[in-house]
Each structure stands twice: as C-alpha cells, then as structure tokens.
Length: 208
Image (cartoon, rainbow, N blue to C red):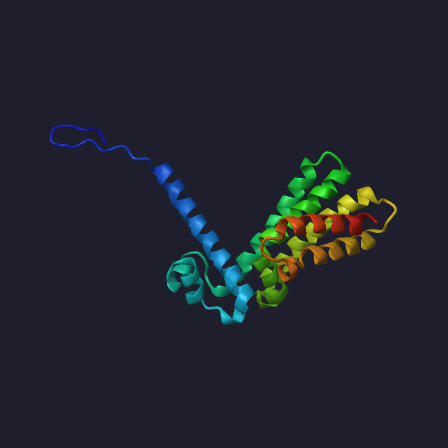
C-alpha cells in the first residue's frame, strides 16, 4: 500500500522465506516423530506404544502428533513407506550413476549395507509389525519392496544372463536376509568391520 499523509509505510515482508522456514521446521518435526516411533515400535512393539509415548519421545504433547499424522497406524505406515520408497529411489539412483554392471552391483550392496546399519529400528519394525498396517498401506509397502527387488534382479540378469530370473530373485532375497540381520547381530563400535564383512559376503552370494 502506498504511503501518504498520516499513514505509515508497510514494512517489507519475506513471506516466501517464512513459508520455507515453516515447511522445513514441519518436515524436521515429522522426521523426529518417525525416528522416535521407529525406536519405540522396535523396542516395545506397535500395540504397546501410544500416541502420548510418541509425543513424549519426540518432545511434543500427544495431541500435537495429530498435526502430522491422523493416527498411530498412520505413523507406522509412514515409517515403513518412507523406508521402502527411500530404498527404491535410492537404489535406482545408484544403478543409474554406476558406470558398469559390476560397479552397479557393488554400489547396490554398499547402499543396502549402509541402510541396514543406519536403520536397525526400521528393520525390526518391518519384521514384527508389518501386519499391523492397514491393508492398503501393507500392499503399498510390498509393491515398493518388489520394485526394489526387481532393481537388483535387473542388475544381476545383466551380470548373469544365463541364470533364470527366479533364481536371481532368490539370490537377492537371500542377500537381503543377510544384510538385514544386522539389528540382531551388530554391536556398538563394530560397524566398520561389519560393513566390510557384509559387503564381501553379499557379493560372494550374488556372484558365486
């Protein structure tokens, strides 16, 4: 608004920057809630965790959780869907950036090892609480996971064209079983050794 006699100029505002800051803060709080949820679900199991528990673990009141999620089940869905989507898109990016099929396989293995070591709680939640999801969310998680598996199978098929896709899929699933065992076997301070060992074992299983 123009200024005139008796009026005070309207101070400039930076609405886009403020909106971006609010969006960033909201995303960070959502991420905090999901980390807390994964930890609590892994420790206690989904049925024994309340929204009040989630809020307390993330430093907010229980009702404040509803600003981000409609229900406790929606929180569980977000934990598993975010992880599955991250694997799918991250794995695709790894393959696209690789300069050759062997490099693609090695980088896929390293990518999944890194995920397993960084997200033990998510893996335990997947193992124990997948069936607690609503049917549509469970199907969505499974669809993303199948796409991730087929990404591996596509790479293996280029490396081992003589082998049937069903056999290659078995190799991929067995490798995931090995790599996803880390929440139950790894110990603090041993991640560097564990990473190297898992990568060697996984590549041996995939290429032997």
